[in-house]
Image (cartoon, rainbow, N blue to C red; front, side, top):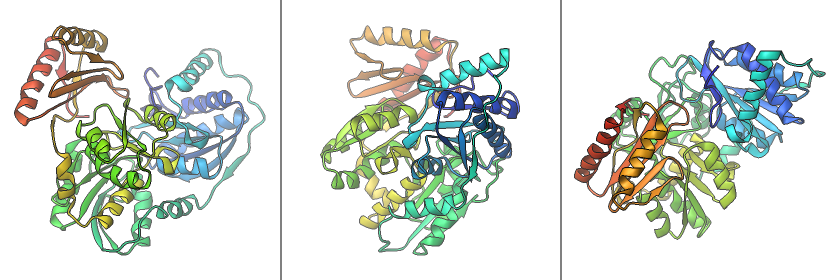
Length: 458
């Protein structure tokens, strides 16, 4: 069971260590930790999700919690339903972009406030460990179980309200990777015949037979890139497994870095909310805060991860934010992330500005980034400490908001431990492609000297 209680959620391989017996204990521990109230539960399309969902629900009910079971649903639909049905908490049974033999639980409190390791998951882990050793207490009188029919249609009605009037037709290639994007995407295009879809892998299949449901990996974007070019689409979109993330290509099939898209979409937000804060994670290009300032907004730099970003959204009163990984956060959706809302905002942008996306993105492509590069290291802490020491000796001032960020004049890098995998992640950016490559060789050489080895992409 080691390692399934993570910074943002609970996640592991099925059936070992995650199985219905453990899901039952997790549900019971969560229910006891919550102390009172109604819990809304949805699950994704993985083959084992219904069984794990049922076991979790039984545990919640044995803790005395009432449960509203909304059935199949994406994680963003779970967040929306949490607010819409006034739940005291909610659980999305999903492993997001992980392979089909993974599953897990994303937990939120009322108003879709995320529960991370430091805000509840750690306590749930301790309780589960104790019960595995000593056995759980006698169940309380079972909480009530209700089923919510029609949640998807109600969710689509709510999302439609954010779509601007369609004044010109668009063609959009959409790759759902057989994940939860396929649960809603047909309904979306059926409701808007002015939009033409080029569908890729819309059938729900928890084994992910075509490619991984992680659009941050370049190889998983290849099909949508090809379809966008072949069918002369205006934009391409690729969802991850639970549809809380979406990544895009321009009309030429070129991948749009998700951090740069924050800068593009910030324009409409700042027109409606002048001067408001816009969030970006600390891996983002310098072009992002520069563009937000140019538009009159206040850029706010945050830690990587949805639990941290959502808390910062609330704390700073931000209207919009995003991460390099393709998460986009919206105050209009209780500060939660939604791949569908990101797609809607891109469509709105293309309605407001008829220029090709490539032309709209060009002013933001000011710098040259490596993208995220992963390394396996013996121990993260000593490696970061030694790299900090070496660069401090050159007069640079390290930043430890999340891992180690080093600003070196016209180039910078961030090194941080992954919150979901045993990896050290590097992001580096420079003013020219040549300098980027030189500096990457420098930093990666240092990591290698300290025992690190490349581990591929995100």
